[in-house]
Length: 168
Length: 200
Image (cartoon, each protein chain N blue to C red):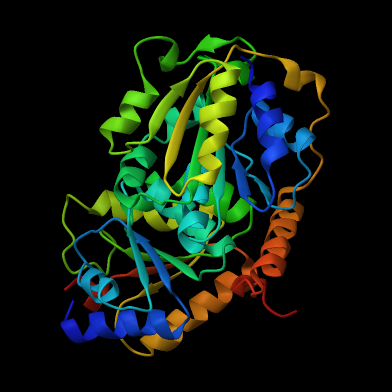
């Protein structure tokens, strides 16, 4: 991902009200981590598993933060239990910022990732989590803002899956 | 020592703390002992410490208490490493360790009934203030006293298996109802709006 796109992504999160981000880094979107870390208006929390990335973000949301979780799409599988019971069942909005490895628009797709990518959207659908695949920076800030608004309205997690230009 | 007598002591000390419970008999016992609006009764295992950590980070001036079980914390051991790194000073965690999967109704032993030592794991993860409590006097002294200190605390409370919770009426508060009671309580006591509640 070009640095300019990473800056716009983080700025888009800020403009959408995101002020608390839990994360486990991955390869496609990792430039956003130092940008969030260096922003005094955003709190960045490193975790050890995507499962707790979700539960910590849920707790922070209930405490008044507007929280996002940054993870690889493998993290959707790891965190599916906490997404279901604390996100969906309890009804707590969080934005999932997901590096979408192995999907068709992944510019670094390979046999290592393709199976992982193939199952991501069916799993999100199975969990009942709304999602959008983003492949370029067109109207990026608006799409992020729309996603946060949708999560808050649904009282549920909402996933943005980043591929295409974001995976270059 | 049984869990219920620990919870009885704890309930007497609760004022404006936020309490997050995991799913187990302690959820039933705690909801029976405490009608505090700051109770968040998380409905499943392995999620309470994470949710409590998020609350503690979001509200660093507010004391947060997590009530969890050995089976539940064994599902989420990665929490220990993260807590050892984050060190939220306003978080007190009580693990009621009866050494069995009591809810399964076959009392099958958990790993803590064998060689697994949750206090040692917590210390190894960097939680210096981790202790094992074996009797009610110690719980009343060391465990309760932690509520007045500004330091992350992790107590493994070794309790006998008790089936008392099966004699108590289960809470009939819906998860969403509990969530909104909790959030409205926070809005009132923190004098701020929780963003996601929004406008209708």
